[in-house]
Picture 1 (cartoon, helix red, strand yellow):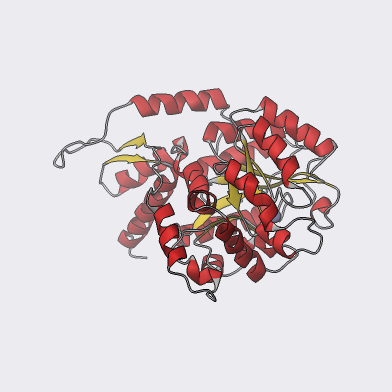
Picture 2 (picture 1 turned 45 degrees about the vertical axis):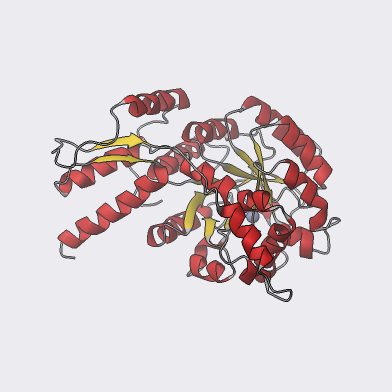
Length: 383
Ligand SMILES: [Zn+2]
């Protein structure tokens, strides 16, 4: 259990939350005059996202000037890359280590769907606090068969976590993951439907491990995709033991489905029946629906998992490369509104500092403001 969350009496259900956010966004406008003295801090939601439109041109230029024998990590050094599936929350310096492999930002968590994940979830948060521009904190420690599950999810989302996952929504084939205590039997099991609705209300992506990627688990996944059209579902390492044709059928049918593509598996795992090239038409056809990840190097080693990210990027058109490398996921982060808990925390901290202000921000920026206000307040305390 993390010390920072504000205890909640009950689960706020999505419609109430949506209503609250709707009202919040209607109040006031930005741009008060500098000299105005506010009685109280005002926080408004600003969830606009404008991707850097020059990023594809940067790729064109660096491809033109590359040396034939250059290491891909060096070629693509100027490109921002997000690893959207990274298990290294329990390591000492994940942002630094993976940064040296070319991963500029990590969607970070640790263990999955078992009690120990609550400890690694808290570690992910501490890495985020220390390094907010490099980490997107995610969490995976909650039971799916207990009503405590959705309560933990809501509390973490209110606190400021930006993603849910990796959640084991089905596993029988994976030797490690199939053993975890809080795994679901299928993607519509237990309290998962409530958790999908919470994910939709907070606009956070939920990363689901589903194996095998066919048969019964996928039939239930399809049901979940249909029943929760506003939830952003991310199919973890969808290319593992799964050919592009299977993925394409699902992408085409469900606009709320996103693909976590793990290039390291396809490039380096002897069990892969495909090559990276086989997936290029899929990524080029659905450039807005795919992200890249290392899965922490599962099965193939971390260095190769990171390098394979660049091998995939190198095969893509510049426009698709910048989207899958970072803009698709960045959009999902930047479009999350601040939560009621964050807003009251900002009011409380600015009140203690006696500095009422007017803020227009999203959930990520609200976290960063809170960290900064907390540091300043700690500084004033002389500790
Ligand atoms: Zn994983």
